[in-house]
Amino acid sequence: MKMKLEMKLILIILIIVFPINTILEAKKLELNIDLGVFPLKNQSDTGLNWNWDTYFVDVTEKASIINNIQNKIVNISGGLRWMIKENFGFYLSYSSINYNIDSNSYYDLDYTWFDGEYDSMSADWLKKEGRINFTPYTIGILFRKPISASSSVVIKGGLSLVSTKTNLYGKVGFAEAFETDTEYRLNWYALDIEISESEMLKGGNIALEYEKRIAMSFDYYIGIEYFFLPVKNYKWKVTTELFYDQIGEQTIIIDPDIIHEVDGDITTDIKFSNMRLYAGIRYYF
Image (tube, rainbow, N blue to C red):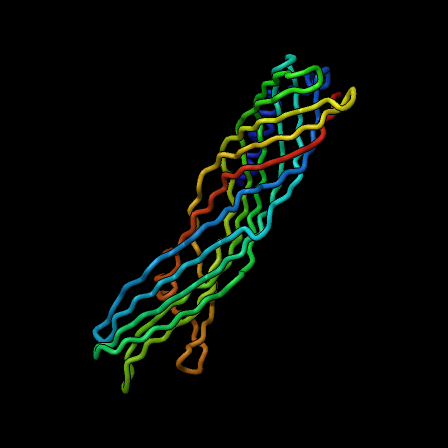
């Protein structure tokens, strides 16, 4: 529902800034399409410790999750310009980017029994595949400065409304100590966790372009732009419904109280701000 309200707001702004009859009558309407790449590597790390004890064992658990963008992101973007003066105008742009993410999870367990005996174990789960979808809608103003009879430099900036969908997957270890009639025991389990969030973010966009006239109605251009967006802190949610008791031989249903001890404790900061390099063709109506 919130996303639909945001889209309605965009349409209202567009109608105010770009009245339909004015656009149709404009003699300096420009349509552009370009191919871009995001050269900066974006990585988010999560690291945390749990220290706890009972009267018969002291336990330290360490977990880390590293999310890496696995490939260079290439995308297509489109836009519309309305030049109300020779060197000043408004612009709209739309783009859609999919980040492929590899999440690597690591877990270490150290424990010391009441009699001083120490032991440890570790586990890792590599290349859990996820994805972040990033779709910015931008409206702003631009200034064009001619530097020759056929070329110009353009500076532009505006407000961006960005639709984001974040789906990341990982694992985390979880230890439990208990006492039986004959012994003290420490079990650990591997829990599946995920981040699944959809959100509209508000931010800004600034860009610098060089454009060159190649025909009466066509330019080619190259540029660099940056999206300024907030860092979002998302919680990893436990999705495992069953886990395996590694000392025993039975599959145990997770106690909801045990889930609560882990669920919500693990968070990751997602950095949506990014830089884009691009090149494209512009058509003059």
